[in-house]
Length: 132
Image (cartoon, rainbow, N blue to C red):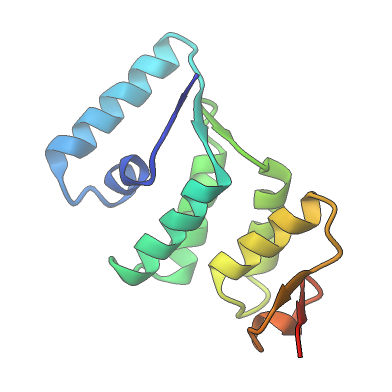
C-alpha cells in the first residue's frame, strides 16, 4: 500500500497545477484498475484542512464536502475513518475550527476523555477541556 501526501490531495482537489493534477488522477485510476488501496492519514487530512483554509481560502462547507467525497472513494483508505465521520457529522453544527474538531474526534476515538487546551472556542465542546 502507498500513502498519499497532502500535496497530492491538494492538486487533486484544487487543480491549481493541471499537469500535477493529471498525474494524480492517472495514479488514482491506475490504483483503481489494479484494486490497489491508497492510504490517507489523519495527519494528512489535518494538513489538508489547514492548506485549503489558509492558502486557498476554501470555505468550510467546501472543505467538508471535499473530505466527504474523499471518504466515498473506494480506492482511498482513510485513517481513523470513524473519527473522520464523527468529525464530518459534528462540523456542520458548530463553529469550532475544523482542525480542532478533527483533533478532538481522533483523540476521542483513541479513548481520551478530552483534549486539554488553552483554546476558549474549542473548549466549548465536550471534546476539549480548557486548562486554566
